[in-house]
Length: 102
Image (cartoon, rainbow, N blue to C red; front, side, top):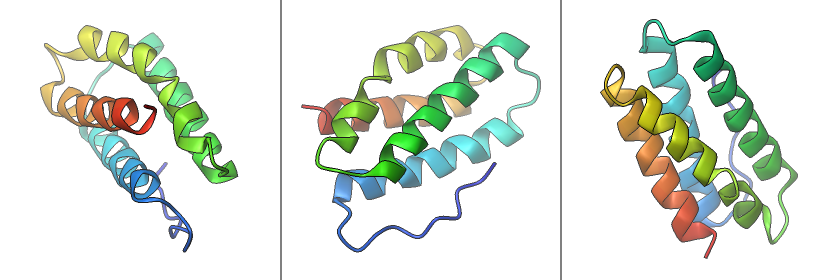
């Protein structure tokens, strides 16, 4: 599922960056090869939740999206050895979430 949404005019740079990184997560996930079903489902759920939060917008959308960072980090640790490219993008996304959520 690729992101095709055009960013809103009033979107903050953090939201724009998050959307860009989400698109990269989707790309790497599509190319990642076999990922165990539970990890793939968890990642899909987390990404979908973040996308919904950003789509709703509002002043605290990025901060709400940042609440997913700990679960993303735990998943990145599980996937690190077998999917380093995907994990690299996940970690960039996690870093941006952490910075934006402050």
